[in-house]
Length: 157
Image 1 (cartoon, rainbow, N blue to C red):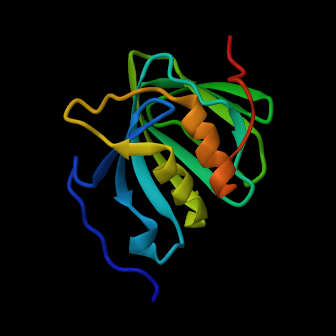
Image 2 (cartoon, one colour; image 1 turned 90 degrees about the vertical axis):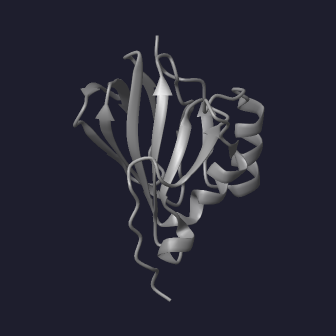
């Protein structure tokens, strides 16, 4: 099988609260693409930061729909506004932090092998989308799946 067609309206897709902060709305899953890739929208608030990490087996693309973020890829730091894009090849260290009151990102990873990490590090979102930030569960999901290597705290001041 090579996947199936997917059409989703704004707001459609499974919503999951990510334990690192933010609500993911899954637009295309690995079930849809036969494991080739996945795509989710990430809604976040100011101060949300990822730890310094890498994905050993996936390439990652972020497209900023709205808001402002600071991105650090392998030591290169850039401040991006809506319409900004970053791509992190597999194995390259990176992190980002939200600098505006809110931000929305489209996150795309290929191949889709790390979707299990995001499912293990999240739960179905409630009505308001908020839930507990729990970095222990992020670390546990990373260790269990091998999809993300956490290398240290966020590299932002």
